[in-house]
Length: 242
Image (tube, rainbow, N blue to C red; front, side, top):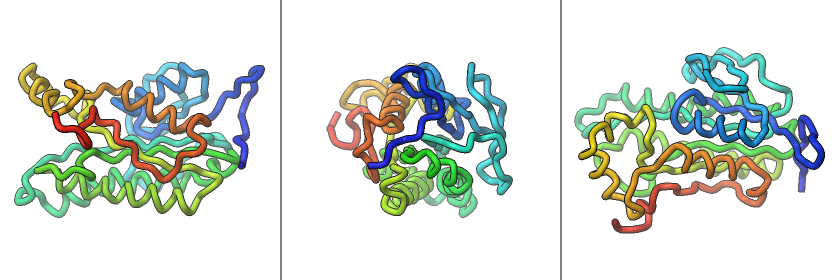
């Protein structure tokens, strides 16, 4: 099996380089902060500047073809966190809604991965984490556009996991509702939050740290025999009846 090439050694502990796309808010921010707490070097890439202590910030627009400058030559992992919560009845969805969701979730991830492929391959063994949604595996009303885009992400994960093995592992996390700025309007009253929590067997909605912990595990060598998987971190929603 290939071994990762560390960037810096501290005794028996190695500092790794990670790129977190969309690392200024919500789940992406929680992932970046946890990686930094673990002592790694983190590059946060987003449209808006990052206020993440000890992280390097680089501008990134999922809809732009501009190349990224400033990333290290070796990346041990990549997280692509941008997404959307575009919930509408199918009759109210326009073609532009589908295009926009696909652009953010799929083409943005493709753009990020293509730009970073050389650096990921240079690591010897690297890991990629993308994001799907519980709504792909479990049909939900008003999720047609989001689920279509994230379903494409799951297909991308499996295809790249096969193509890039064994040098680069590729996995996805499929969360249910998580408390982030993106989902704020869905849980902005006690009544709304209670209703959402009651749909989960574990009796609450997710927190960014719930997802970040899973993402950091998939990035680490602790998951070195895991690739091509879509991991449901969803309070039991996809398998358990509340």
